[in-house]
Amino acid sequence: MNFTGNVCLSGGAEGADLQWGMCAGSAGHQVVHWTFKGHSSKAPKSEISELTEEQLLVADESLTRANLSLKRRFPGSSWFVNALLRRNYYQIKWAESVYAVSKLVKGQVDGGTAWATQMYMDRFLCDGEDISKCQLYLFDQVDEKWLTWNGVWQEAEHVPEPSGVWAGIGSRKLTDAGKQAIRDILGYSA
Image (cartoon, rainbow, N blue to C red; front, side):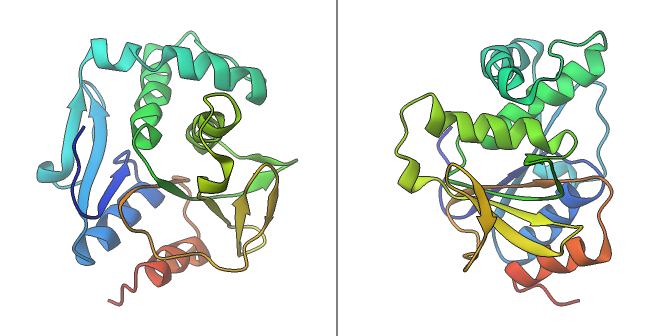
């Protein structure tokens, strides 16, 4: 894909995805919410990009590799859940940086957000991208602080405002602190 300017890649889900999209759009960023047939989203239609079945299947190699670290199950028995995970691949495939809102549980990002963050990590751990260029940030909704990952999770001294092609992703269960973290980093005020 050829993106120009500031572009937020997300998934159109309730919670963090829609909050990232709204705030990014208000900041003048282009917003792309990846979806697929059968996946409904409350994102503006102009921001939705529907993936084909063929496009979804491209993600399987990355998901299979992420599964080794996550120790979860891919593919699972649900076509819909598998499609959600495959959609996550497109959130990070071209991202220069990733901003996630979730929580860290035993050193691992919680929920479905873990799949996207792990696939992004794998670009540096497995695909030979220079780890010094890794820009992965997590707002931990439990500890209410930003973390960064460069081989290990640690508290972030500075979290830059998203720019370029970036992913804005996270939990469907967005807390008030998580919502405010998204708004603050993009300078959104209602």
